[in-house]
Length: 84
Image 1 (cartoon, rainbow, N blue to C red):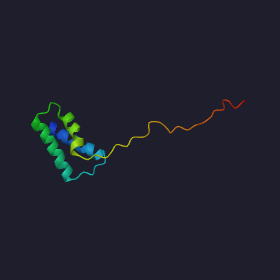
Image 2: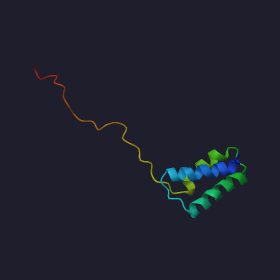
Image 3: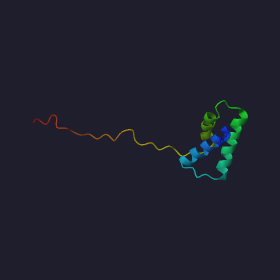
Image 4: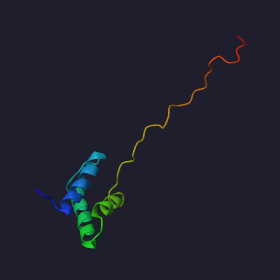
């Protein structure tokens, strides 16, 4: 069964929120629906891009926790200069 662009956008928004740790409720669904509706009414050329760009302005998303880029540097010696 084919889905409309609006259904696809709403599904993407709700899935994105759930994956990012937002506990979805009726209020979140209504805000997401209003966001998609606004994008459709504006006639956005690329609805998905516009909706995903608007998400941080409409929802309070948890901060993204990234792992450290590299291990902590430790001063060490491999024996050079020991005179042996």
